[in-house]
Length: 554
Image (cartoon, rainbow, N blue to C red; front, side, top):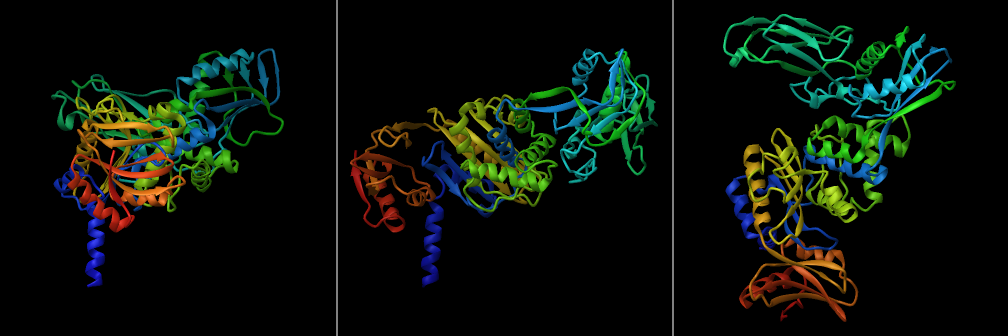
């Protein structure tokens, strides 16, 4: 008998965790509730929770975990921070000849690319250097990350999303091979002698489709100099194509590109590349700076750039615990920064590499929502705009194009095999902003999870509510959009602001409430247009929250 009573209590509490519309969407999806976590809450401290299901259960986050590093970066470094790449020299400069070495120290700028070389070389020339008798020394010791090119997370080890970080990053570790099928010409984009391309393609006079539309690519990294083999038959009617793969070391690519650019600009380098730390006798030459952190975290979130996310994690590790940064330092730094700033309340966070290519990373829906709440309260729309905007840009540009959600949701997505997640902010039809986290891990198909998420987000974007600020408590409260609603359930009355644990009991039931102050802080659940609806809620409030609760009119 006792087991039946406990089971009834659990089922009853469960049934109040979701609004009717969301409950319907969940049933329609056929995804078991145990496979998902949902948490939808109005933005603001102690604001009402609209929906909660398994909100404290740890789930695999996939790429939604990137927002932890992007937000921690803003907290620690600021929106305007720029990654430095420092240049030094040894020896003497006389009559345009540097009788020594040019030294480059990387500090993890993930954006450094071939377009930056023009500015870098011009600054070298502006210092009067026309010849370098020594070597180009590269210091990549700001990170201690090993020498792996690819994470090897899945069956596509040479794809860009598998690129590993490096303090001396260049072109996001991507090697680009350009193919012109009409003439069967294959070239590298940029001068890079760190790998070879072997063209074994055969052109055929066939339509550019099917097996004739794209070359076969095989990469051999077993030798000191990696080789890229282009194989198969390709139509000579195809246009120019670019093959972008993770093939070689970024610092090698940077060295060859820099040396070539210097040569073309009239600066001769007699030496070669050496990997060493900046010597104590080195003299600063100049510092090249990246784009702003605001731009970098926006690309990290909107485009779900794994390499950028890895670099942010490691950079924070160095700033908090000192260089050289390691993966473990980065994990600890992100968590410490978030906790120190009140953005992380629940235990159990497992960050792993910070980019989401992980099955060991774990977080909960509420953990993520708490962070979103903290971020919006601190930085408002400036933070929100770093996320993908529905129907406008990033990973949800096409997903919500032409729908009511367009320009009303700012979100980060995350996808792995059997994992489909989305989180961020959604604005309803009344202009009220909500934090929305929907995490799904299921073998029922990611397409079902995506449909469920779309249904919930669309419903919320269409939903009307009435929001206002309680001037006495400075709390934002929300009421459902009900005509002539006048009945409330008074769940409690307090001389001080109600404890969060008390309000959490109501939130977990999926009920809307507000805190009104008039000599005392009154917690009012509702409103309801009909007294019988209020009485149904009263039964549950008395059973689960406060046996002294009663119905009142306003």
